[in-house]
Amino acid sequence: MALTRTDVANRVAESAGLTQAQAGDALRALESVVTEALVTGEAVKLTGFVSFDTGERAARTGRNPQTGEALEIPASTVVKISAGAALKNAVKK
Picture 1 (cartoon, rainbow, N blue to C red):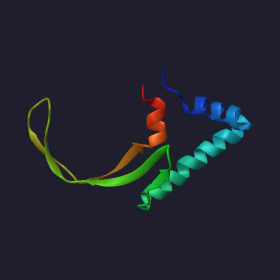
Picture 2 (picture 1 turned 90 degrees about the vertical axis):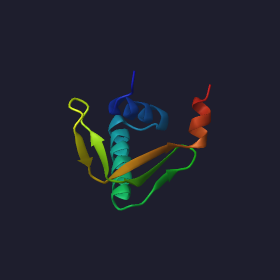
Picture 3 (picture 1 turned 90 degrees about the horizontal axis):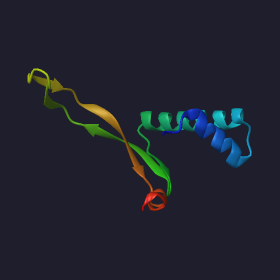
Picture 4 (picture 1 turned 180 degrees about the vertical axis):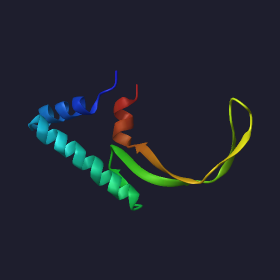
């Protein structure tokens, strides 16, 4: 089962002693800051937890899986997310 935005906000509220509204506002603010940084080309690094960065994907030729027809896929900017060492170690079995 995946945690929803509301679930995360509720857990943050409990953990940090905030109201659910405050935790929801903090979560939205974090999303906004990360999004704005990535749009302007900045990387975001929360040491030990997660890193967000952007990368360029080159144009390439793909295939329609139903017809096999070749099609051009344009170049694009993508988001890269990497888990930090502390997160990796916490999840490692």
